[in-house]
Length: 64
Image (tube, rainbow, N blue to C red):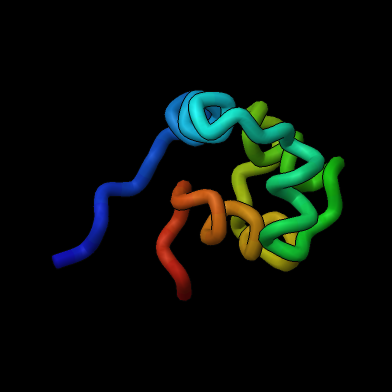
């Protein structure tokens, strides 16, 4: 069974609920901070490259 994908807003809420900063999450998943913030704010949809890696790690997209 495939886990439910999160919306960017749900992913942000989940991170904040954990008490972590976006910078900590970026370091944890091995992505740069600006890319993580762009994906979480919906400015980057995470279709390619670093943004896709971040979106998959954040639970917003499925791995290709």
